Length: 343
Ligand SMILES: [Zn+2]
Ligand SMILES: [Zn+2]
Image (cartoon, rainbow, N blue to C red):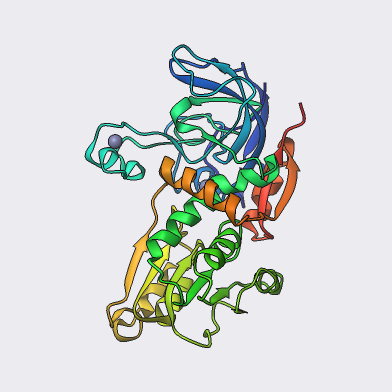
């Protein structure tokens, strides 16, 4: 099978083509696993964190990709949840132990043995992948394969971030960064909190206009002040300055949710400007989002089908995965980037 693999950790600025096209043996589904013939796989900012070593894969080479849509091709022994031909999706959660306190309490995303798709196990930048059948999700019919892919991480983790934001209908929500995830969160938030107004902070005018077209009440540059204080803000940027700006914009008792697996080091010094009174006092909170549970994915897909959420996608062939990653790094973003397979 064709696959794009990562052989070594590299900064994209030094190696603009970190993934290599190779031919690999098609994997065989093990006990309780399914073999998926991949149709689409969305590109996530976390892939940059893997490639550049901020959350490095424990073993190389690895096939990245954790927003995978495809059809069940074969069943391993003992697998029977799906039938061959069923359409399934795979997100960031590849497996968890199922046995620890976190797993037992519905927090499998915090399991110490959490395994991530495309980092700890081969993912969807390939024509086929295998996964335990309990960790795959059925995809609602209303979505095409292209639309469904970004829902599996950008959408599902965005949904987790929105839940953690603890918003009440009528309270005001801020979104910092307007890429693959927040353009879905905006659509979901408008549905769940129809009386809330949504304020978007994005660097480019194109992103700001995109946000307004999706129903944002206001859009501006991250250095601009929103016209009012916000009860919750979700930050999806890889930088630190937006964290300070967001804290300043929070209303008393407000909460900042950082939806990023890693932050980059470039502007970390801006944290030296942290001012307790302006940024933290008045019971402001900061919370991060870690990984995702199967339930987040299932609940989000069901909600997304109700809304229905319409992901904006840009399509690339598998062979152009490096280009998609470079454009993501350069923040040439409108919606989500999706690899499509032609078999
Ligand atoms: Zn992701
Ligand atoms: Zn566990």
